Image (cartoon, rainbow, N blue to C red; front, top):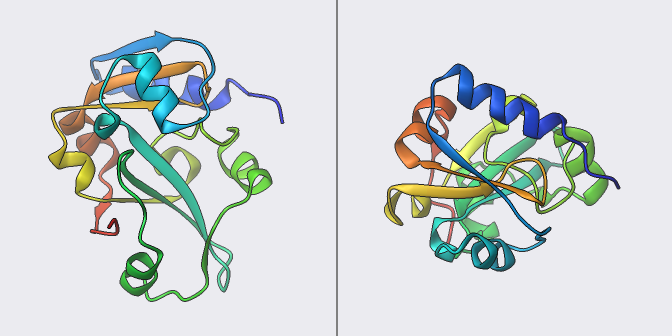
Length: 160
């Protein structure tokens, strides 16, 4: 699958429309949170890892966002959402829903018309978050408070 600038442009527009201060970093392509943190020169904790999940029963997608240093607890998220058939979206589904290749999905489910759930690990790690913004070669650094204000995610503790 080829990268598409559509999501990157939507993120830039969202941030600019809301007068959000952010830094854009263009870098070599990264696939993992660890690679991204290294190329950005920031802590792994500050990475906003976004995972697209699908409820197999309803076919609906959700976006789970957490500190990149944490792991999603399948047991916890399934219990919290009362959903036994919750799975990670495959590469094709990720692209269809977000217009992003895996590793480039930003923490804004709202631009995909998907509910965003946020684990508190991203808030407690510090004031700034970092994430790939639709492209594996483009990262954004912004305030966690600004992120919370414009995305307004549902906060649930679903990481171990």
